[in-house]
Image 1: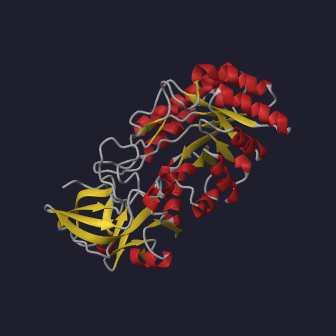
Image 2: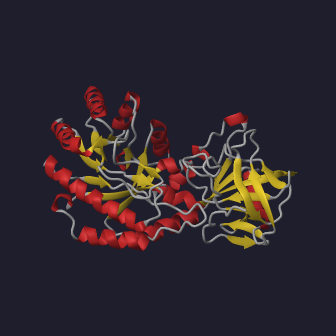
Image 3: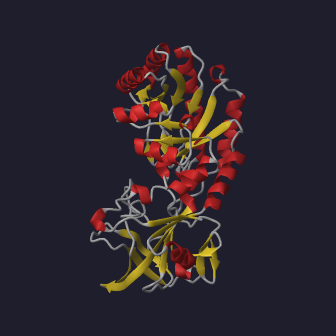
Length: 408
């Protein structure tokens, strides 16, 4: 038997079924018109933002990293909950604008921005987090041709990384950002060009559950930003400190201790370097805001036994939940939090593997998990499905198509 990850707190049972926001899984499936289905809870997102605001110093702004989940109703909800959106493509920019987010509250990071993406961002007054000197030259040329004043920041590749992060985005040789030692010269060029200087973006890693490591990295980010600002010789208007806040996915994972991070930030801001006295300070969070607010529901279409092992075959799979299948950055496959939604309060009585409908052995949602007995027609729930689910999975693979999505 392989353990499953911890189901996020707050999910209840109604008449033995999983309930989300006071609605049974079966009722939500009926409302949406079938399975597979992603269900996102607006109330859980609001609660997460509220707990975050309570723990963090009031000076810290919160940005939503759209790549975590760009579902339009979530973007419309987030527009009123956070101070800005962080995007990584022209497609995300169009989605942010369609959700009503004004350009001046959007920042655009990511290597390989095409000229048309730079032009679109400049047209709408979006802050460009520049990833190279070449990108800076192209942005300045495009802005001059268009007769626009670009809003430019620099994404910094620091000489340190976030300890324990699932994906490291800084330190060493990286495709992301400009090596810290080269930042002052480029910043002076940007300021001298007449562009609007928008500061620094320092993102070091993601999916960390060690609050002490995050606090240590945030202190390093502040120190680095102060040093670079001294060398640039111009006050820093804005510092995007990145994010990295993780959520528990696997057995043994513990929730992030926000209190530790908030206290460390409060202490650090109490002795903030003079160079950052007037700077806006922001955290860029995605997964932490929406990950635990989502549940993926898929229906069992077959129950079979092969050489003594029980398989529950569903109408969903890795084409919607690539991460839960173990094929999105994990080295060793481990089980996500899963449950038989139709029998949420039932005792566990059998060992079974939950697999998808694709013709590949990679399509596994749970291996040898301890579950209530489940049959054809029962619903399976995969938790922590609010981030890097529908939009981060190959929905066109084998012609299966996209899952339904609803925000309740």
